[in-house]
Length: 391
Image (cartoon, rainbow, N blue to C red; front, side, top):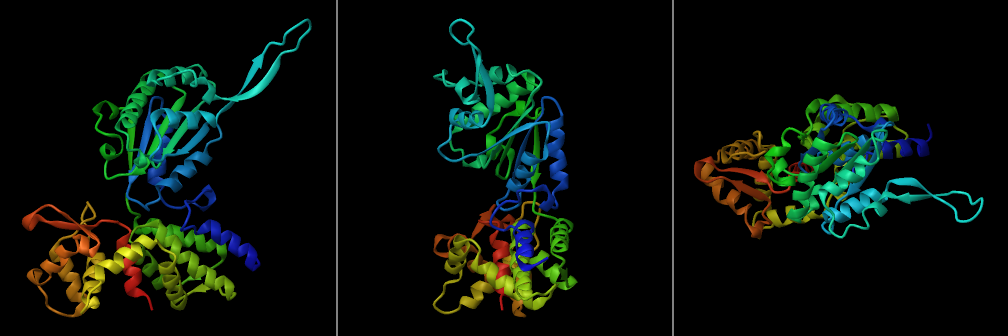
């Protein structure tokens, strides 16, 4: 392969700025993918895919969208302006069908034209869920449809969420040719669509957690294989550690490290290329992360102390809710600084990081001795590790 060919493959194999589009370049997440496939294949089942920002939900949605040959897929990206009606207008506008009309006059021939399904709801002044069900049922059982509504967390209108919950329940009871999949950032299903106990039977709940080490390895190994690049095992471990379970950072570091290798006609990913990747990655990450980090460490006397506290937070062991305690932070802080600080020494600083003057970089959970902390933006954990390991 020449440089141009390798760069073309690189942009598909490692894609930090855009979700993965093609199945051949999608690695990891097989457990979640299989759960959604089960819902698609089971009559009356629908699915909701939720989790933190940056864990690969949209990439998985894209793979579902392109993987089926016997299903007509429609994918809509939701925004704050969308209502129940406008979402289905956009969805139906993507489905075309042939409409035949009789000609006028002697020996007149019938005429056919392609129209969108959007026209079927234009006559309804107040679109109801049962009307959507009727339209889909009128298509018959020869056509199987899959509607993916991505970034559903952008929907603020509570009525829209209520109508979708009602529609999914109605489709489950009265329709066998349609699957609805909702995708969005949320800690729970209730955060995304509200509390509806009647949906538990017909809505498969698929949470996208942060990636396991094995899944991160799969992205790295398979991506580098496509580029014929080898990697030092210790460098692979560092990439996985820095990424903190977010595929975005795996893609970010691998892309910029491999790009430098390709430019220099090299095939071995060693530490100098990781250092380049870290610096390039920081330059090309979210501006909001950089601004928040800068505000959190800003001090007239000792930026280093605030950096070390944040680095200790980033290295702290996480519980099932991705949170950590002051004791966890102190333990890591003492490792970093080679000091013997205790909880009371750092308590003030840690609480300051939950306030506006420190950009609210941390969120406090609970009260008193049971208090725990988490990063307000989950991806900050990985960003801090990159900042503190940049050379």
